[in-house]
Amino acid sequence: MSAAPVPTRTLGPGGPEVPVFALGSWNTWDRMTPDDAVALVHRAAEAGAAFFDVAHYDMGPHAENARTDILFGEAVRAAGLRREDYLLCGKLWLWEYPARSFADQLAVSLDRIGVESADLVVVGDYLGEVDVPRIVTDVAAEIEKGRFAGWGVNNWLIDDVRAAIAFAQAEGLTPPTFAQLKYGLVRRTMAEGEPYGELFARGALALQASDVFEGGILAGKLTPGRKIGADVGGIREAIVAAYPEVQRIAASLDATPTQLGLAFVLSHPATANVLFGASRLEQFEDNLGALALLDRVGPDAIRTLTRTLWLDSHLAPTGAW
Image 1 (cartoon, one colour):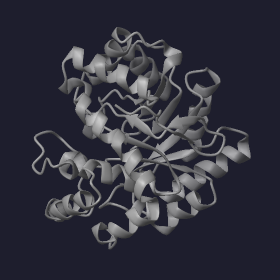
Image 2 (cartoon, helix red, strand yellow; image 1 turned 45 degrees about the vertical axis):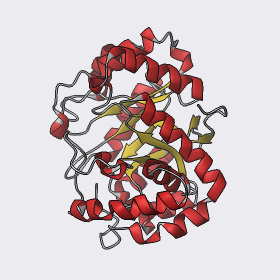
Image 3 (cartoon, one colour; image 1 turned 45 degrees about the horizontal axis):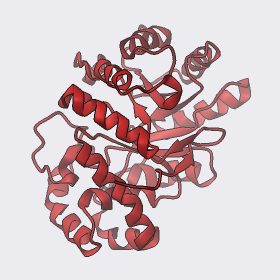
């Protein structure tokens, strides 16, 4: 087990200090036994990575009626964690907004977890046009109520992100401080392309990386048996074909493919936090090894060794992913 605590980074301008690792809830807590869930929660807290992204999956393409958020709440209580012992990031969906208001969504999702408030929320995803001023204003209203303190966006069009920051600043409201984007060894364009890259470079936003392992493919599960994230750009076959090269590079560094993937994401200067799913304690322990790999090899060398794995470089970086 790792003796050193997971390091922290600032989650954007004015944002909180957060551990660089966070545990997600989509298809995770409902794939393990209650005892295993408790053990994972306890170990995350022990390692200094008690940051949990938890959503109620009941809208749009995620209308799954999943119990993963309920199970998370049960695991945290069974593990003996007090609310102040961990960071909680919720989700506000735009699929049925504003018909289903943020206030109503929070009332349901927080009740399902069994808490009164979150620390942060992520607002997304969407198709078509969105009313950015209304979103920022409604988010601010929930912050005023004490339901959470800060927020980020999930795979937004870059012009909408800029509009949200500008409107919030003009109105004296809380702007988004981080962007949760699909980012990893093979999907880099959204995070490293010029539009988001400009905001990252000047410190206007921090990056929270998600879908790092492509639904488990880059962890060796080449034919995932569960629902995984969208295949933006239709490159999934190429990702599967690239996995042996991921294995080769990782082995050359005396590391696992998952450690390589996480170390790569942490090598991006804007990355404040990496969100991953883990359904077994062994997976979490393996992931912790990415920190030692990054220290031992260094970010520049990791990026050089993996430069040929960028598979979506041909895609436009401005679309909602």
